[in-house]
Image (cartoon, rainbow, N blue to C red; front, side):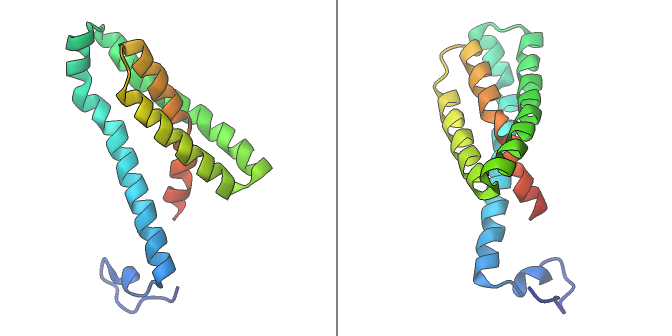
Length: 134
C-alpha cells in the first residue's frame, strides 16, 4: 500500500489494491456483526426478563459472563495461535462463534441462553483481535 496523497477521511481506501479492499470489508463486516451480536442482548433483555421470569440481577450476570468468557477465550486463542497458527485459529474461532450464535437463537430457557452466549463469546477475543489490528 502506498502513502495516500489524498488526506481526506477516505483517502486511504483509494490507494488500496483489490485484495486489501476485500480484507478491509471483511474486517469491517465482522466487526459490525460482532457489535450487533453483543448489543442485541441489551435490546431484548426486558423481553427475556418478562417472558422467562428471570431476576434482573441474573439477567445482568449473563452480560458479565459473556465478557468473562471472552477474556478466557483470548488466552486460549493465544495459546492455540502459538501451536497451530493464527490463520487456523481464526478459522476455528469464527466457526465456533457462528455455531454458538445460531445455537443461542434456539435456546428454550434462560440457562440454555446463558451457556450458549458464554460459549459463543469464548471465541470473541480471537475473532476481534485481528480485526482490531487491521
